[in-house]
Image (cartoon, rainbow, N blue to C red; front, side):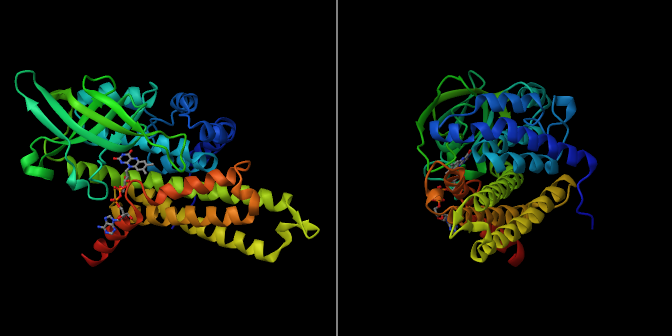
Length: 380
Ligand SMILES: Cc1cc2nc3c(=O)[nH]c(=O)nc-3n(C[C@H](O)[C@H](O)[C@H](O)COP(=O)(O)OP(=O)(O)OC[C@H]3O[C@@H](n4cnc5c(N)ncnc54)[C@H](O)[C@@H]3O)c2cc1C
C-alpha cells in the first residue's frame, strides 16, 4: 500500500493551500458576518482551474480526478467552510452533465462551468421530500405543441440556487407514476416561470446562500432533459454518492481549521502564569483532535481513490462523509472549549468554525441516512 501523494498532487496541494491562505481566509469572517456570496473568490477559482477540476480538458476543464478535488476542498475548508461548500456543490452540476448529458449539453455547459464563471446547483429537496427524496412532487409535464416541459412545484434548501447560472432540477414527468417518472432537467437562470423564493437564515455557512426555488409553469426546452426520462432518482442517488466525498473533504478541512486555530490560541493564551499549551488537560484535547482528523483523512482519500480508480466507492464514500462530519463537529467542539469564553465570541474564527461544522451532518444526506446506507451494504 502506498499512501503517498504524487508530485502532481503535492504541487496541487501547495497551490490550493496558498490560494486558501491568500484569497479565501481574508474573506472568511467578512462573508460570514455579511451573509455574502464570495463572487470574487469563485471567479478566481475559475481562473486557476478549481471550478472545473474534474472536467476533462476537451470540455475546458482541468482534467483532474476526485483525489485532486478532495485536495482542493480540504485546503479551502480549512479556511472557509462556505467557500468549500460552494465549490463542492458546484462540481455536482458538471458531474451530472458529464455522466448523463448529451454531447451538445457537455459542449454548452461544461466550459462555462469550468472556466466561464458560471455557477451550478443541484435541486432535489422539497418541503415534504428531504431524506425521503422519493416523495418529490414537482412536476414536469410535456407540452407537445411547444416541445417544452412545463415545471410546477417548489424546491427548498438549495445551495447557491439564487446565484446559479444553471441547475439540475428533478421533477416528475408523470405524477401518477410517482418516483418512476422522476427526471433531471437543466434549468437556466431567467427561464420564464422560474424564480427564487425564501432566502434561508441559517446558523452557519453564511457565505453559501440557501434558497427556495419556485417553478410556476416554468418552460424548459426538451433538449434540456438530462439523460433518460424516468431515470432521475437513480441519477440523483449516483450523483450524491460522488458528491458525498466532497462534503467529507469539507468536514475534514473544517476539523483541520479548528485544530490550527486551537494550536495558535493555546500558545497565545496565558493562564496560571503559563500558556495553556503547557496544561496537560488541553494537550490531551489536541491528541484527540489530531487522531480523529488522521482517521477521517484516510477514509476520505480512500473514497476519492476508489472513485478515481473506477472501483465501487459508494459505501466507503458514505462512511467517509459520516465519519468526517462527526470529526468536524467533535473537533470544532474541542477547539471551542480550548478557546474558553473567547471561543464563544465572534471575534475569533472558532465560533464560525463551530457553527459551520454542524451542517456536514445534515446536507447531502443526514448521518442517519448514511448509517442506513452503510448498514444495508453490510446486511444486504
Ligand atoms: C444548508 C443546507 C443546504 C442544502 N443544500 C441542498 C442542495 O443544494 N440541494 C438539495 O437538493 N438539497 C439541499 N439541502 C437539503 C438536505 O439535503 C436535506 O436537508 C437533508 O437531506 C435532510 O432532509 P430534511 O431536512 O427534510 O430532514 P428530514 O428528512 O425531515 O429528517 C429529519 C430527521 O429524521 C431523520 N430521518 C429521516 N428519515 C430517516 C430514516 N429513514 N431513518 C432514520 N432517520 C431518519 C433525519 O436523519 C433527521 O435527523 C440542503 C440543506 C441544508 C440545511
